[in-house]
Each structure stands twice: as C-alpha cells, then as structure tokens.
Image 1 (cartoon, rainbow, N blue to C red):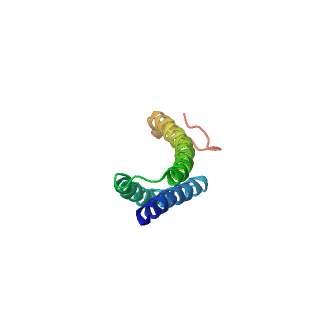
Image 2 (tube, rainbow, N blue to C red):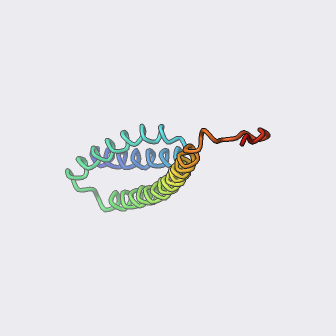
Image 3 (cartoon, helix red, strand yellow):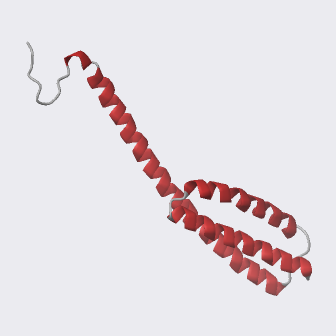
Length: 122
C-alpha cells in the first residue's frame, strides 16, 4: 500500500511541476522554465521506476489515469506556449536578418552618405 501512495505522490509531483512550467511560460520566464524542466524530467524518470514495480489497485489506477490525463493536457498546453515563443523568436531573427541586409546594402555607400539637413556637395 505504501508503494501505491508513493506512486500517486510521484504523479502528483509531476502534475505540480508541469503546472508550474505552464505558469512560467505564460509569464515568459523562459530561463526559470528551463531550470524547472530538469526537475520535471527527473521526476518523470523516477516515476517510471515506480510504475514498473507493484501493480496498482483498480481505484488507484483510476486516480492515476485522471492525473496522467491532466499531465498530458499540461504537456499539450506547454507545447503550444513554446511553439508561440519559437514563432516570436523566428520573427525576431527574420527582422534582424532583414536589418543586416539593409545595413550591408546601404553601408556600401558610406562615403556618400548624407545626414538629414546636410547640403549635398557636388
């Protein structure tokens, strides 16, 4: 019975960590999210070791199934938030690349550049 309690606690910890990861992503605290991801992966790995041992009772299986569904829902939401962030970063990289092309192109005419209001010398 104690192992079953530990298994349920492990699933609850994973769910809690995944909920925290969503909160961090929603507030754009990406560095904190990356740090928490290590704890999440460790919790998942240790839970996998529990799962392979004693078979849970039917009542516990139902609790675990519900908790697992919540974890999977959190994973889906987190992937959506991360995809949004990746799209933002792609846009920023694209803007930076376009700006570099413009700077490079107009930088060729550096010796002929005029500042606004400067008279043109011929």
